[in-house]
Length: 136
Image 1 (tube, rainbow, N blue to C red):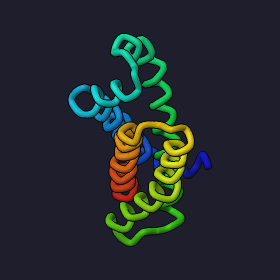
Image 2 (tube, rainbow, N blue to C red):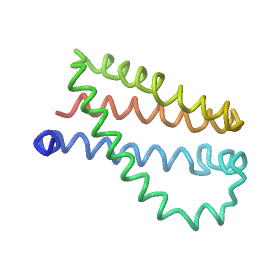
Image 3 (cartoon, rainbow, N blue to C red):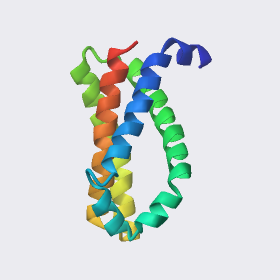
Image 4 (spheres, rainbow, N blue to C red):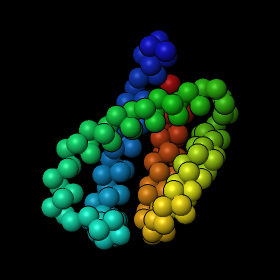
């Protein structure tokens, strides 16, 4: 596993940094931050107070996601970038969206919140797949 990581480190690092950037933009006031805080009933002060811990968690989660997605791409061996992106959409649909919507239904979460979160995951995974396919 360490050898795999070292052989693919530049793509995994770039995909990790891109995932972090997408999420930070996605939940900023520039994009969906105001709506996200409104539906979560999270005050801006509370959000900022926990930001360092949240970003640290995001770094770890993004790295793990990039590493695992790269493994899927290696195993599936898509012939081109479009197939790699399709793979990420299937992963999103089968695992992220299905479990996310299940949580929405059983926990009576807002559909607006789910749409914000799930669309972030879809965009992030597809961009990561494009990067991970392109950089070996």
